[in-house]
Image (cartoon, rainbow, N blue to C red; front, side):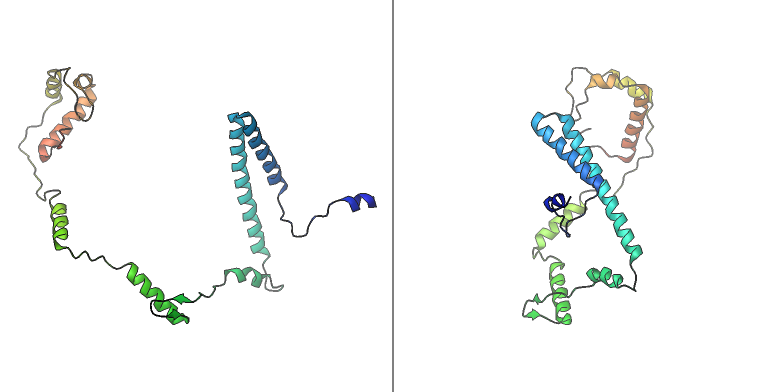
Length: 213
């Protein structure tokens, strides 16, 4: 017994603890990855991906539980509260290299940061009035402020639209929308109804697509 204990490897005290379930899943994932490298079977690759997702979810759950237990056990009597809060304490900002000198005090650091942010977020000065005028005219001329509204147009009926579609030539080349006349002739009645509404709205507001679609 003593010989067995002497021959056994000692576990270092600072060794990171790994949950047995995660250890088992790691071994299975690594084995699936090695089998995929050997056989190129996609089933092993999918299995490795599923096991990896399980490991990530289980690891997050263990870390959350550990952090929750740590919060519950924090007290002011044994000094654990101070040990827990110490990493979250605000650290001092190191010296900053300002435009004229090195900022050492808190006031100098604040002024240095304020000056840097002010320079970064100031408005651009183009120094080109012609470019500004060109952009202004382009934006204002993109759409005319005058909205046309023709109320004296007699609304079309689906029967008229259907008769117009019947008169179209099948052999005519389609437009940019790649919709040929043969496809229009096969439209069902409910689509003819929606097409009638669209045509009426186009004629009412006086807006037509530049490409004719």
